[in-house]
Image (cartoon, rainbow, N blue to C red; front, side):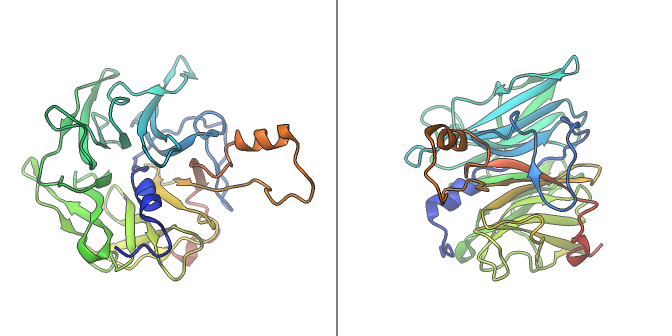
Length: 330
């Protein structure tokens, strides 16, 4: 698989770290999202010095889940965290009840809030963890999660299935290896109470480059995804937007410098009201090429700050983006 300057390990690390969400009433609403450039979301609460990825909101906005990964390369491990709004205050993020034993990532709430989908290496029956990621789900009712359920072989395979996203039709979009194309966006339609065998997304969204991490508009009007290897990219991975034209998806348009950076940008999600775009970025705001020697405190403070080159959640005012006319086609 051609990786366009990105190592296999780095690509897999990025692919396994994201998840779509239909966020509703946004928490931490004392913050104001910019229309000119993306900023950290929930600085010090969710976006910290750790490796944070993707974010999902329950339909009522009172439950938030996201992923934290370790920083080793030999034994990459992902864990899903949860925080809840109780008596007007947000609880300290804790490992979600269904996570922590196996490598888990990419959580997202179904539109009705009664199911949560994610990926995991947990064994289908018993025994050792799988060497690849499958898509699973848990029921969510009265504040509790059920035991995980495997989504079956119509969707899952012996290779990784990553970053699930679901529309109001319950159609399931996700990332998977697709022959010589590397990773592409796949679709499994929901019909008569079950998922049909997966197919590559129709149209010109998928290319010989790498496409993954697809957020799908609830009515399937557009997809925002990460592309690697595109000639118009700003960094190692950029966010692109594709439009649905009678079930044919258009070639992606780069979303511009106000969203993308010279680093990896991925894991897009638009809130259900269409106002905010969330995504994961590995931006590094540290002046390592300082003209003067750094003190111990300055250096350690840099390493322990969110902008240390690890993953963080960013957001931007999607409706008021000043460059929106450059790529919108609605």
